[in-house]
Amino acid sequence: MQGKIIKGIAGFYYVYGEDDALYECKAKGIFRKDNQKPLVGDNVEITILDEAERRGNLIRILPRKNSLIRPAVANVDQAFVIFAMEDPKPNFMLLDRFLIMMEQAGIPAIICFNKKDLASEKETQELYQTYQNCGYQVLLTSALKEDGIEEIHRRHNGVQLHHCFLHRQGLPASVSLP
Image 1 (cartoon, one colour):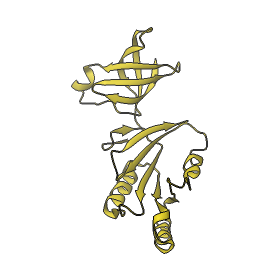
Image 2 (cartoon, rainbow, N blue to C red):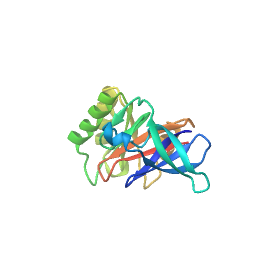
Image 3 (cartoon, rainbow, N blue to C red):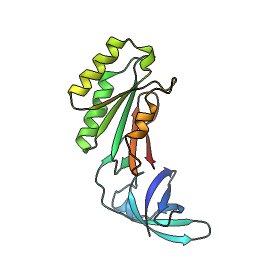
């Protein structure tokens, strides 16, 4: 059966199967031998060990269209690079590193500047224009005021995509949005 890895924790991989069921799987030793690590987002083949318990083994990783090391994800359709406008101020070196990483992997990136309500209109427009002129889609949001959040949801247009969210405040996250 084929499926997609949606979570990996301590050697267990949670695979959403083509039968719309979630399976807890372990990777076979062949992956270590081949120096290949299963990643969240990988399309895989699994064998079912226990249908009632929804347990199985990963037996093959299907070809990847792209992958990232940090976060460790594969087959990303879209990256949202999220930075606060204020508190803390954006780290532009880190933002540019994220954008370069996405470009190298061939992953389209959308930049989201959050906390726009804390920044001046002039600063907001300068950042918007700078990155827009570089060819990036830019969103200006305020999560606190729920301003612009609907635009993030609109960007995937109801299509099943594997999104990667990168941000300064914590660990990167990778999710599939319905």
